[in-house]
Structures are given as C-alpha cells and as structure tokens.
Image 1 (cartoon, rainbow, N blue to C red):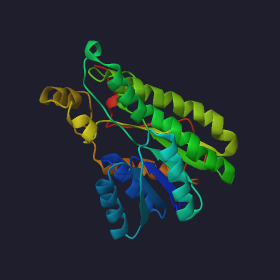
Image 2: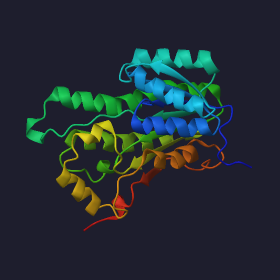
Image 3: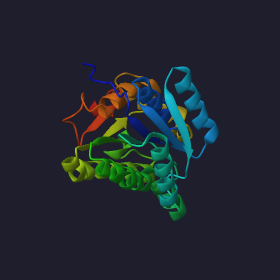
Length: 255
C-alpha cells in the first residue's frame, strides 16, 4: 500500500504561485493530485504549472485576489468545472513588513491581516463547505510561522496574523472533524521567500543561524514531505489540529 498516493484527487493551493506554495504544489502533483494553482501573479503561477507538467503532473492556473470572497467563489466554480471535486486545500498566501510598532499604520495592519489570516478563513469557508457537501472528507493545510509563538521581534503584525492562523487551525480541526475533514498547520522555520528577504539583514540572519541548530535556511523542497503526509488520507488519517514544525530545530532553542 502506498501511504502517500494522491491519485484522482484535486488540491487547491492558495498562493501556489509563491516560492513555498510552488514547492508544495509540485509535491502534491508528484503523487498524482491535480493541482489548482491560485494567485494574482499569473507569470509565476504558470511557471509552477510548467514545472509540474514537465514532471508528468497535471495543473491549472486560477487568478484571484485571495482576500476577496467573490473571487474565491469564482475559483471554486472553475475548479469544479475542471475536476468536479476538491480533496485538499493549502492556505499558503503570505506577506510581511518590518515596520516598528509605533510607526505602524492601520492600512498596513489590514493588508497583512487580510493576506495572512482573512484569506485562510475565507478559503476554508468556501472550499471546506464544498468538502462537506461532497461527503468524502478532505484535508486543509495552513501555513503558520515560527513567529506565531513566541512572536519574533520586528514583525509585529505578521506574528499576530500567524498566531491567528494557529488558532483558526485548531478551531477548524474541532469544527470539521465530524465530516472527516482534517485541519493542520505547518510551521516553517526560515525559508528564502519574497516576504522575508526585505527583513533579513546580515545581523538578523546571524541571529537566526545562532538560534537554528541546523545552522542554515530551509529549502522549499523540505516542506514537500510534510505536505504530502498531511494531504494523504492514509498516512495522516488520525492527525488533525496539529502544528507541525519544519524549522531546523528553531523551536527547540532557548538560550
């Protein structure tokens, strides 16, 4: 028995055009899932689609602002027209800022909260309800952060938004368990991505390495195994409400 076989399933990856979301999309496709890549940047999304197809997988691109309910509902309609069902939802959209707390403006707060947290709630409502209606279970995988608990310095709003992702993950795990829909979160450590490049000064990078036992950044491909595991109905059938760290040991450090 192949514990990780995702043949004849459909995965929706919100933010699948990003560095981490792209790697997760490729992972799901590698095990036979049809992958719906959802994001605003079509060029990047099509790059992911091309890599998937070159590897023998199947993917389609769907453009949407993931913070807008009507646009996500339209994506749902389009995905169902393409494959007829949805089995896995990955919430991977993210943005960040290093604005000091007393300089923070509410428009920046709202933007980060919308992308990092509101999108998780909206997508889970829209695609989760479809999973319920299908009556065959499913998996929702949220992307949290090591800054969610305890919060990291210099990323106040980001840390607050990711703490919210943890809370939403646990709440939905309870809410959706009767429908055999599992809800879990991956807590990545420090991976090279657009939202963290602008805050990684040489001094901050040195501090991160000091607090990461493996003494390096993660590679996006190192999220793939956990993604496949959580998507698989066989491998993680009794796993829900979990926050799984993929952080090189960052969460194990104190002083």
